[in-house]
Amino acid sequence: DSTGCFDATAYEQAGKGERVSVGSPIFFFFCINSCDMTEKAQIINIDEMAKVANRNGLWIQVIGAADSQTGNEKDNERLSAKRADCIARLLRERGVPEDHIATSYEGGIDKYQPFTANRNTKVILYLQKQ
Image (cartoon, rainbow, N blue to C red; front, top):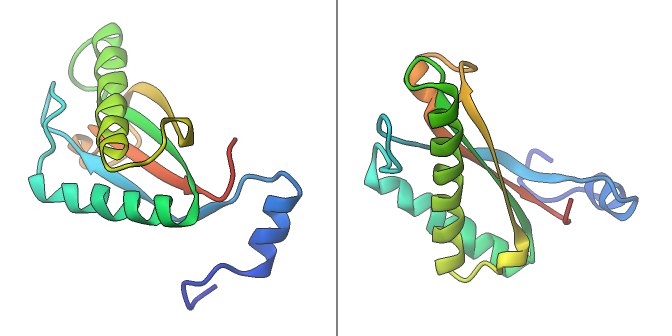
């Protein structure tokens, strides 16, 4: 709800097996053709997500991507997978159980403007496993 608290509907949905996300997705942005984050301060988001996930027993989906304007399909798939693995590793290093993290990748995408925003990894917190 608007107070930032979980509402009864979310728990009911989770109880019925529906996957319920917690809050908004968090995006991490990367330099071209690398797994280096554009801003090192983004690590604060990793620290805080790990604390919240560990404290509340949450599940995490990590989805890597690359921009489709650079590289070829094979390279973009490889790079987006590496970006997802990088964020997953940082979460594990902060105590999130490996079995609470699922990774996937999208390859080269063009969903966002400016196009450099497509060089990302999106992280979603869930109340239950998928």
